[in-house]
Amino acid sequence: MDISGTLAKMEEIERKASRFYQRNHAKFQHDSEAARVFLEMQIEENRHAGLVRELRKRVEEAPELFARADIPEKRFVKILAVLEMELSSMEQLSLEETLNVAVNLECALSEGYLADLHTESDSTLRDLCRALGDKNHIETITAFRKKRIGC
Image (spheres, one colour):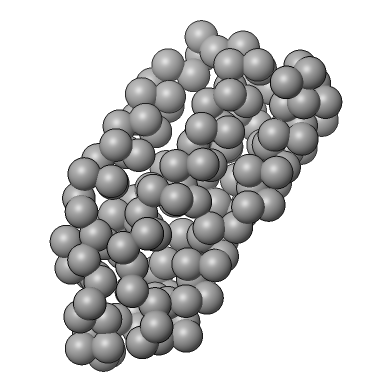
């Protein structure tokens, strides 16, 4: 997949991840700590979607700088399938199950589509990959999961 297609899929994934956290923020309103964590994660995913949108604009201005980006579409398909499944079955999940899904989701997001993205030609793309691959998300969710359910 070329860079335009890659970025379109990345933005879709970030928007859906944001929706996942938004729905869990609403679902767990009775638990202020959980609601706060999910809101923070939603805000971060929205920020990521904005970063991807900005890069899409940059690519439109100079697509030749990004010619080496070629991400296998199957990476996106897998992440999107997980997101769609979780978004459709969220009402049935406990907090523990939701946190496990969130950990898996963050691991997939940080590693799933960045491995084949060539970043040496553009500092903006490099910065985007650093921001999207931020391990703080995984650490935030795993720390909260450990605090709440002990694993």
